[in-house]
Length: 191
Image (cartoon, rainbow, N blue to C red):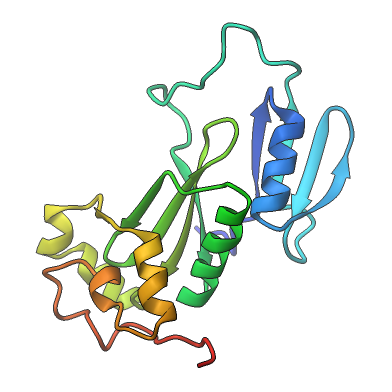
């Protein structure tokens, strides 16, 4: 069997059609490639669409909040190239009043989880390790003790990062000395 060559797009069914289109346009800095009263297609790159929406009509009055206890997609993840890009995205979204519901140090990634208007989670991450090291880490004892990762304070990380102070202790999980320091790509910010 041949594996897929790439992940193409995700489609959401929603009762919050306009709100979802607006949120994803702002959060992903996406363009609306097509929209009518039934369907909308958005993209943030050269792909014809990365996110799409099917309009289910008005929200029924008894369905104010989505359930997180029924089967379905847990989250969709997007990777940025550098810590600079991830922190810039965090600051841009915070300026729009959009805050992560859960910032997590996973060991192999540093992640910010956001919830869209329907309650779908999006993970915005950077890889902290190359593929070989990440696979090794996930098979090791530190990950086995806490596969969910640890919370971190993005504002504290930004304050130290922008002042030029070391941030390894805010990025890496304690107890994985083999990955601290040398594995972290330093800032590409000027100054």
